[in-house]
Amino acid sequence: MKMNKTKTKILLGALIGFFLLAGSVAFTVKNDKLFAIAKNIDIFATLVRELDSYYVDEIDADELVTVGIQAMLDELDPYTEYIPEEESEDFRVMTTGEYGGVGALIGARGEGSMIIMPYTGFPAQNAGLRIADKLLKVDTVDVSQKNTSEVSELLKGPENTPVKVSVLRDADTLEFELVRKKISLKNVPYYGKLDASTGYIKLSDFTTNASAEVRNALVDLKAQGAEKLVLDLRDNPGGLLSEAVEIVNLFIPKGKEVVKTIGKIENVNRTYKTSKTPVDKNIPLVVLLNERSASASEIVAGALQDYDRAVLVGRKSFGKGLVQTTIPLTYNAQVKVTTAKYYIPSGRCIQAIDYALSREEGEIRSIPDSLRQAFKTQNGRTVLDGAGIEPDETVEAYRYAPITYSLVAGNHVFDFATQYFYSKPAVVNIKEFEVSDELYEDFVSFLSDREYDYTTYLEKSLEDMKELAEQAPYYSEIKEQVEALEKRIIHNKEQDLISYQKEIRKALREEIISRYYFQEGMIQASLQNDSVIEKAMELFSTPDKMGQILTAKSE
Image 1: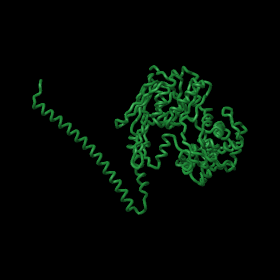
Image 2: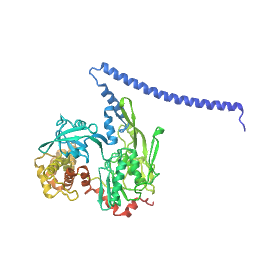
Image 3: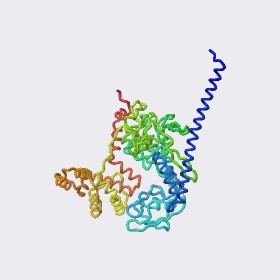
Image 4: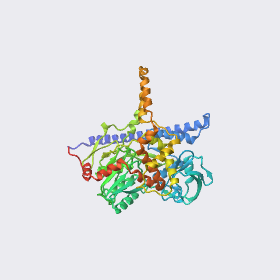
């Protein structure tokens, strides 16, 4: 049945009116929002101007505004941050891993600053600077009382510029002439073989060239006869998303989805896929992760888990499923803004903290288990979203004794290793070197005139119990027994040095080896008696078990 012209005109008029009204409402809403923003910016600017005019004391407008900006961003999430012009270089170094300098990590050990780690192949190490060299002068500037950041700035500078460094080593004052170079921090500080057929790659960052470094290490290890691989992502805070995609591509065929980013605006919605032929899509692979593996580390571990390409070993990862974009501001400032969430191939987002809910309730809130959703890997295994990447095989963290923490934090292990190096400059063999009984006794003697103290777990428990007991009305009746128990469990340092010597020897061994082989040697030494590495090797020795882990269990 045909509609008459009058009805058609009425309907058409109504539709036009509806769309005009909708457009008007949308325009009004947008206008209202823009007005609110403009109004509040104007209020803020007026407030700063009036404070500068009327406040009783002089104010630093730059500092005051920066504090205001930071306070505003604190209402969002910890990854959205303001980067003023003076911090832009530090931000660039963090994202690229490159700067002009001498290539050494410096830090405080007692008064002043010293070389904590000269990086292999860079000016500091090539010139002969060593761990524990105390910095006295940089060019003509006395730095003996300056803080670490001030000394670091003096050592940095344009590439190919000279710098003189004066240090105290043991009892000798030494001078070095260096030429600053472009320092590119390694994403792979160490790779090698755990046994005749098992390769190992330590990936510590995802700055520029991370994937190329992993590729080169993998190719070299295969040339050396590696038939299995451990990729260590423990303590890796993440970095560039593109590098994570390329690293997954080393093990996954071309054309596979690795990660998808979804945000509020269209141009951040993107799907990242593998684009190259993999180096090895079949090599048995174990990925190590822990609670400090975050962001890009979780993309790599999660994607490999979703494709059932690797067995994950260790502990649940950090749970950062947010993507940041750096946006330039006026006057060379920048803001790093969270613009999207990322989703790995199974469809899950691994973000563990609901910052919107946290703002509403005033405390940091993890996504509750009741709201976590189940997804499936390629082989049909169940995986959950909302709490980081969970390993296929969990290895609990080793809990070091308080005495070990005290000896390391108090620099006693560091200082003893330095003393050992001064007395025995000949290079030790990493695989053969052990802390002998005689050397351990030397360490115990070294501690005899040093101050170090700590509270044992049992003492802490007793302190808590005593604090509660003192509030009870019958405390006077049990006071004598509590004090008697307190006397009995007061720790004995000499006995703790015997009881916990295995872990103290491990700390000593790693620190001593670092004096001769620097960062690479320290990492290699740390792999001995590593329970997570041991679990990985156990899995490789039982390929049927690895296969079972990567296969969905029948219901």
